[in-house]
Amino acid sequence: MVQLSTVVCLLGGLFLIAPVLMAPTHSSMCTPLRTINDSLSHRRRYMKHNFPIEYTIKVHNREIFRLSNISRMRLRTEGLNELVLQRLWFQVYQGVLKKILWVLPTRHPSRPYTAELERRFKDAQAVFMQSHPAQVFQEDLPEKIQDIWDSLTEKPENMPESSWRFATPKSLLDNLCRTMYCLFSECFSNADVQEDYCEVSHWRKGRKKDMQPES
Image 1 (cartoon, rainbow, N blue to C red):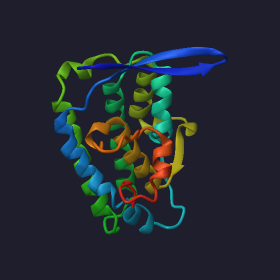
Image 2 (image 1 turned 90 degrees about the vertical axis):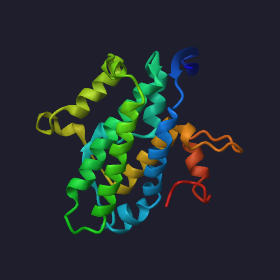
Image 3 (image 1 turned 90 degrees about the horizontal axis):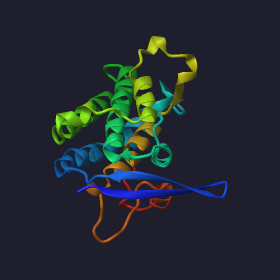
Image 4 (image 1 turned 135 degrees about the horizontal axis):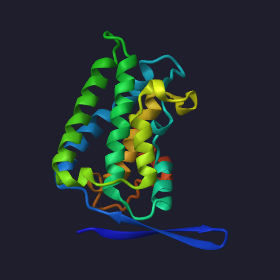
């Protein structure tokens, strides 16, 4: 069953209402996503301790994909389907993982970890594709989402210099983890505690908790 959630934004004294179609995560997705999460629990060691201080890699500015990006899309894209955001999440982070892996020499201590994380990510992506009818992935995307998708799939040599940003590998995987929890929250929910993984405040207050998926 698809639920309709309404997001309200106050702007200049006027209420702007943007409906967001919320679809439950297919149960088959939870196992591969939790497997990704297991890998991400070691990201501090492999994405921070094994790199020089302040080491950054070059990524597309759309690959800096945070909780704030999801919030803005939900507010500004009328009739946005949650499935579209999940599709975009996979598109973004398959590129991010490829870029991290690309900069790692064969003998770098973080390469086996990153290669395994990418493999697990691809496994989850395959399950995601199999969990929905093929025609779902042939439907037109909302215009704003299509623009992002097109920019992500553009050939690098055709992109202007302004399209690129620099980010630390650790920050990229932090974003991967948090947005995964937000977009697939049913796979990580606690029956005893109500958590909103899409709220930045959740991650701030949870940094010192053992349950918080940071390492």
